[in-house]
Length: 635
Image (tube, rainbow, N blue to C red; front, side, top):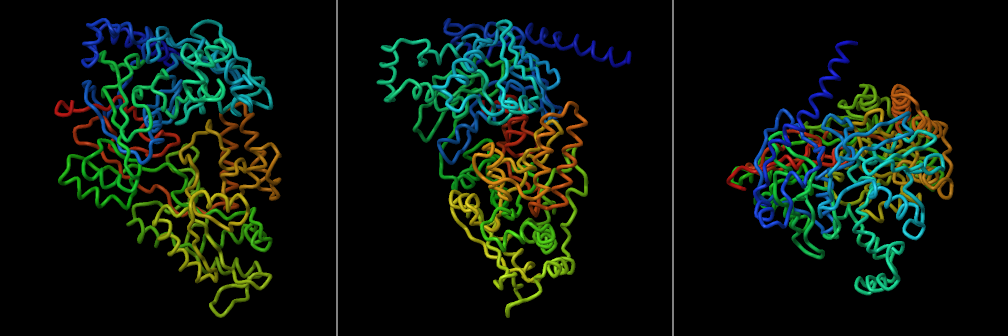
């Protein structure tokens, strides 16, 4: 106990000491020096927070130098929001070890997962130099979230617990408190998300477009200039921090957009008031600007291979790897293989809400789902499609998750045609047509149409191999490609029998991350879209879950939300994972498919390996791209 107290005291002593030492040795950013000398910009000690965030670099990183421009390629104009994801400045954020820590916030306190006290950094400023205070939180809550003219549906669902809104208080300029009468375990994880829950807004800027703060005459002029019919539309259009389409909107991100759309090239410049510095007193980000060039998504691999991007993961796939690796020999880049964090790279989703009653009865029988899984030759798929680079697995948590158990991954994935055929015989599917295809209860051949979004030949290649092995069990497979919109509508309406898509969005969760993806909670869960719709609409649409196991999952998800201890949340997670293992509601095929990441050879501090997925890593975000830096040749 004495040792623990001594360690805590040492940490408390060293934290302000490190901050103080960094503040004593502050170095002005070279590209901003001229503006500082001209009096256009305050010196660095007046731009950063008094309680600055000193970044501790990872072991594989070294302190860098400031300067240079990083080039990125994106397939659409709306993809400029990726820089908000990559920048990953959040009130609280995940570390590479998937721990939540204060970032924009100086610190936070949590009591029973009900009361969250947020402490801001004194002296922190928006990108235009205006103070960032609790007024920005008040403006969001009172003037946007609970204003029926701007938020017709009320505050975001994750701020509503058991039908009740939080009590939001502002004890002083640097303290904000959210309180609920019941636990809200979603709150911090939503603040840390790649598309975060924004509970603060630049009040000093947005008040210009708000009826509470402006006269009718002023708003009329604003609407006329903007070409909008009412002030709410103007306010909404100006307030898009995630989309990054308004260069006038102050930000707290490392880089800020300076280009108005439409454009085929967007320039993001460094935020001179950014809150992070390195241990040598240099303000982050190291890189001065980011240029996003818009090109057809189909051309991104080729352009990347032609050395037109300094850091590229988006729009690259494993089937580009050989081409990119060959190009690396003549161009100035390295190709790295990162892991993906989805529970399954590809999984089959039997639609338990399919309209056809005969198929519905079959799909809802766990013996049928397990038979289909046993009739998939995953080793062959790994060998032929993925060159033995992937893991054959169910759709479940990965080994890197603290919730992992080997049986979650391995149960029912062996190729066992004898067992599969025995299960199908037990279901009464003993008759066959002249092709050897089994006949269903109504005499129709057992033909399963699998919907695909038509976006990847990889899915087609995998389905062709499944077709061959399923046929040995007397099941005929057809793949039906379509656009993503048509694909989803067929599933939602119940017309689709089965679909193929990626599995669990976050395959490396901790017990404090919501398990809602394991229960019928969203219509975008393709195995039970109508049950999910019922949950997310509070019974206004969709259908009540009919299977006992599905109802238990819903109850367990709600139990997790009200759990009082970490161990209770662990126990709920394990039970939900076990139900999904037993019931095989989705049929995972493979996971841990490598993702190529191209890195310019002059660019440093990019990890050699990492997770490339939006949840929970925000792609590059948790590895702090503001700490990436260029050698002098590129600065």
